[in-house]
Length: 84
View 1 (cartoon, one colour):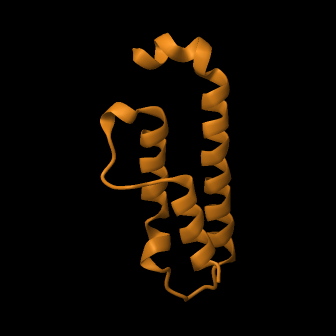
View 2 (cartoon, one colour; view 1 turned 60 degrees about the vertical axis):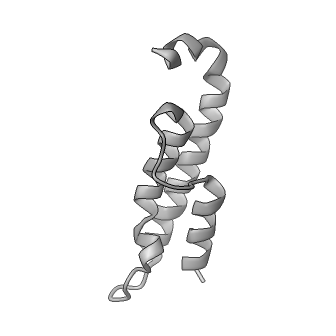
C-alpha cells in the first residue's frame, strides 16, 4: 500500500533501480553462459541469484528487511571475482 501511495513520485527512481537489477541479472547470465563445462561454480557465484532477490527486497520492500548486507556493488564484486 505504501508503495502504491508513493508511486507517482517514485517512478523514475524505481525505473533506475530496476535497471540496476536487470544489468546485474544480465551480467550473471553472461558469466554463467561462458562458464567452462565441468568446472565447478564458486560458492559465491552460486549465491548470486539469492543476492539478486535480496537486492530486490532491499530496493523495493525495505520494510521486510534482508538477511545480511547486500548491494549492487557487492554483487558486481562477486561477478568480477568469479570472472577472473
